[in-house]
Each structure stands twice: as C-alpha cells, then as structure tokens.
Length: 124
Image (tube, rainbow, N blue to C red):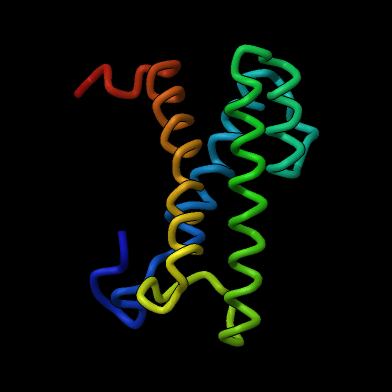
C-alpha cells in the first residue's frame, strides 16, 4: 500500500492509510452513540470500550494501534526532519514493519464491523 506516483512514490502514507481510518471510525461510532463532545480519538475508543463491552477488546486494540502510529509518525518525523507522514518502507526495521503490520489488524476488524453495521456493501 505504498504511493505509486508523485514525490512520495514507494513510500507509505501513514496518515491516510492507517491513522485516518482509525480516526474516522471512532468519529462515526461516537456520532452514532450521540456523543459529540469527545474530541480525542483515543478517548473516543476508550468511551466506546466502556459503552460496548462485547467489543471492548477491539476498541482497546484500536487505542494501542493509534498510540503506536502516533509514536511511529513522530519518531519518523524527528528522524527525517519532516511531518513523518510518508514512510520509506524499505528503510524501516523488520521489527517496526511487523509492528506496523500488526496495527492494521484492529483497523481491518473495525472496517468490517462498520461495513456490516451500516451495510456499506448493500449496493455492491
């Protein structure tokens, strides 16, 4: 899932591909619950974990994934003297690559949950 063209060709867009899905899903689920006062993605997922005990573990995994992604982006930004948004995948360690891959597990599960809940595939 790297950029195919442009100035960031062969780089991974951490914000668009990983962070924004987590942010948007937390917003959607809080809006559905009628909660508009919580502004932090992490706090939204913690609220959702308390609200929906059957999915508590998934929401807490989303918190961990988002915290890792924020840390990773900040670290990459400091290391590269930029925003840390675009990651040259070939330059990161094998360990970081695996942890980054693991962060996608709750993202995928949340996307599946949203698809089912709101029947996004109804017209497909």
